[in-house]
Length: 413
Length: 67
Image 1 (cartoon, each protein chain N blue to C red):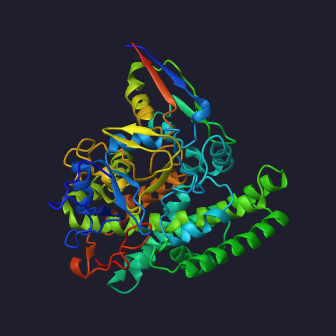
Image 2 (image 1 turned 60 degrees about the horizontal axis):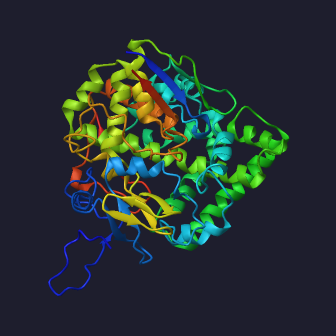
Image 3 (image 1 turned 120 degrees about the horizontal axis):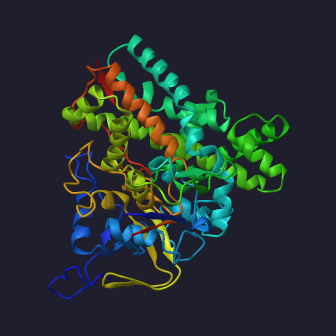
């Protein structure tokens, strides 16, 4: 229990803050205000999560950086004190094989190096012309269609789905199937049963596909993992689970950054003008990082467990305690980003933690950056009159997913 | 001012962030993306990029000796 929290007059222990926290609905693009209170009052403090346990919540940028590279902080979700995101994740933890998402070094390093090759910065950069063509074609189609259009279905969802399908070697024709099942896996409103069925469906689908790649390999990532399976460097189960993880991680996150990023820019016309009028690739790259910082769409926190006692500030995190790192809290920490509540595309934002920090930082971040650079660098130049076609207060936001987002974004031009 | 770049290779998780920040100084191994130092004594005009690379390395695997 944090000693900094004020105690009620009757001397009883105050209730811990509930986590995840709720947003202020009148400021739909800002993180929950409770995070700022937590950072100011008890930057290393307890919160209460869905199962009644009270892991630590770390809210300062500097503390997160220190702890997320600390070898005493573990990502092993088989540990009893691990602060699972929801009942589904708790239920499947023991049935999940060792993956880059639930292991520590040195096992994590071995697994991560096995899947890194397709995400090499130069290899990703080589995809720029192909992604540019995808974006141009989708914008052509949108402009030829009726107004208003839903930016989510017209652009935000198909861009990352087409790209990840191409990269992995998954037929894009199946995108309805993998999109709806991915959503169920990530939605904390879905029942544990629904999430398990969805996760099973994706696993079965990828396993069948991997089987086909083993017989007739191509140049895609799944075929590459297939070759490693044949060479005995990786098990088939590892390859299938990695494929599912990439498919899930690869589209909803980027789609959300496209739609929510556009919404944020439409609310800040002076910032949108910067992107529209300046095509210097450095301006666009800087804008992408600032929007990643400002929006920090992962809203359920990065989860870890302490393997040993760790002193931090005036607190001691005990071995076995769960730890949650709220990425938005770090990215809006005024000590790291002055006037953090201001969207400023020209600020140096590169040290943001929207992709997490530490050895588990997002595997696909270079791909995500590239997709966003192409979209942000193209959409507002090609459609300079783009405007929102519905009042902000009538948009429906996703408060229950792993990532925040807007369910539909009507735009006109 | 001189700068020496040291890479703690076992820690490297091949995120490639150093390549994005200082492409003249860092590259990635083809087979697994692990960082390679191309120039461990970079010229002063490259120092800002290298400092950024060290600051954003998610594994804190880049150490700089500046004097």
